[in-house]
Length: 607
Image (cartoon, rainbow, N blue to C red; front, side, top):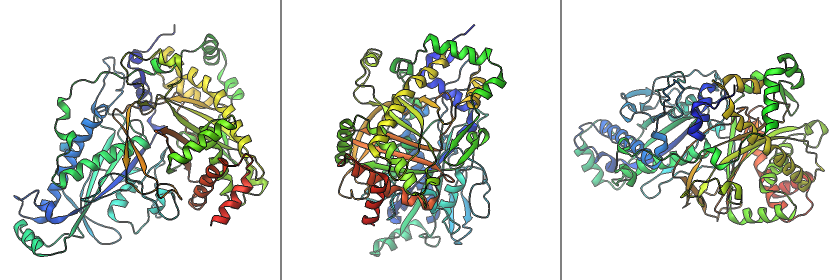
């Protein structure tokens, strides 16, 4: 008899247990923040320490501990643990213990530059091959996001190069400094998923000793510094690694920024407002609305009957014959095992300014399509246009691309009526993300708006079954592993639909002064989004498309993240990808007829 699982009342947290059980399909991702500080001011934080190097290290260690307490208060959901009495894996895990952040001071020599650094790190050193690449396959993106903090600037920004958003992993090489080597290794250093008491994120701190003076008394250093007009700079790097079941790229940047703000505030003598209370003493949180109250995912009778017939009545041989267990991506045929452990992805981040966002919205309405379909079409144009032989028929093979869009459901009256009383509806984002894998064959003469209209039809067609299948989770008996594994073997070629919950919470927008994130938009201000409450969960099928496009529009600014596998989109091709993508968005708003050939011609003229 079908029954509702015990975790049903936890709402969106129930998907976390599934994700933890099937952790092999997920990866971790790492981010690194850089802090540059005046050594004299830093040493004054630990006046009782005789050795300058020790004083510097102690001050930075204490700053990171303070930062962890800060983000526990800013994002209290990250500090919550749930353990079911029946032995169900926890829906959440606690943060790293601040006391274990820095177990000891380890003086390491850089393998390449010969410089010494003081490292505070967790055990584990994953192996890399001769080329410095990972020997352990990971399932999603490892993003190296850098920031620079000074006494006058605090915040996290995605640094770019003149090439505009190259693959972030391309900066990793043999001659990299120690922090960059550690960042690379962190991408392959897996978490211990079998122990539910261990946290699913960790912190590594490195202190660059380049600016360190010879061992001396702090008082002597202070006197010498006061007499000198030049101040030595102390540089440290804070590497935070998240498991993908508790954080994604956008939320990881947000948490990292808040951590760096707290670290900089402490080291510069300030007091971060979020550190005034101990996270342990925080009152119990009221649960957020479950996915059931936000999105109508109740499966229809037809969906239930179809699931029963497929699961119980059809022999497995017939299931595998009806639904081929592989996906076609471009000219490549990927078997199921490759999908479960897909290759490393490249991550590209962008923020489209309000002016262009508004123009895209108006143009999409005029051509009877949606902004999300427009973005996906531009991504396809960029993919085929960035190929060396994009003008040939051989380069026009279908590309499976998954687009995810955060939906606020603000105009959905049926969803509004389902919300609990008093819920902060106007400022809530990320109710659900629906990913529809579509297959497009783009030719040089392909019409942009024709493809955008086709993309909208595919997205709309796949939305209903995606929500219906997610609703089936409430009717499963016992463990969900077999159910999800069976779906991973019977999904049709390139036609999978997913529906998941991500970044469910209240949000606020903060004006930032980071570097321009789009070419040609250097004068626009960036909008940083801070989620006051972070909650994560995953979808039912857990299959990662080899091309992912995620779009979030908040306060008239469009935030786009894209990830492509390395073998699908090599580094050199990605450098050509971004100009074509942005040109497609800029040209489509002013032209009712636009082809890929015309976009490529415009890019060549601009170059």
